[in-house]
Length: 364
Image (cartoon, rainbow, N blue to C red; front, side, top):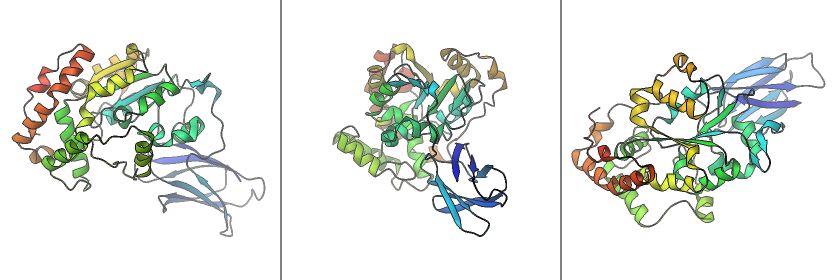
């Protein structure tokens, strides 16, 4: 039997299974996600589509199991392991042409909405699912694996992109990304770092994965930063990947230094020309998403007319109750903590961020 999982959508898997013998009898296929059967079908033809019943995560272990009419297992196929070469159009000498645009982050700054908006342009194909782990945890598996796992649905679109917020934060990613495609265009969404830190904490707290209060969690993170614990050396990277859980939470809390934007951008500017970088401000993306998208499409040298047909509803919004957890003392501490980092960002981008220094604590 040949074939496998050829394409992931946001909630399903598609592919084709070919048989050289016994073609007249149906086969039964099962979709297993993380060991659980989530969908199944009887196949008489060669093409299939099975639903995961939820949004697919890059960390999911996915298999298609095929059985003959007598119930005997014929074959199993894992996501990303299909025998399919990299399209010639993806190669550019020792580098790669695609993906050609990377939404880098920051975390909790609207990157899910931006990913979905970009994916609606007829000339753009965005990774499915969002948040590929390739550059941080799958890099050794190579470009063909990267294509087969995340971009199997590509049909020749002019722009290919992905969105992964950890690519902005992790120190070892810029060199990998620069070596992969030094001509790529980079999009970064920046949000008031104090507000972003609270939203980052609440992301895990509201899911039952953060036991500490905001004050205790931020203090714990500060102590980690002062101790110099990061993910930069080969040993640290190896440990990070080894402790990379299914929820992609990582070994450390990174609430505070995920907002050290000047450090993160500076690392990328060592590998990419400044004109390859486009900055979007979270407030603009929220208040005027159409205008923000027109600017992005122009940056990508695409027609901006499709904006009128894009569904610009926000995605992946925070659960209610976040600001009830944060008092004025914590908010003021965060504002003060980020002031020197904001000054360095001003120097890098030649733009004032004094409004971040004086922002009142949000109420909703």
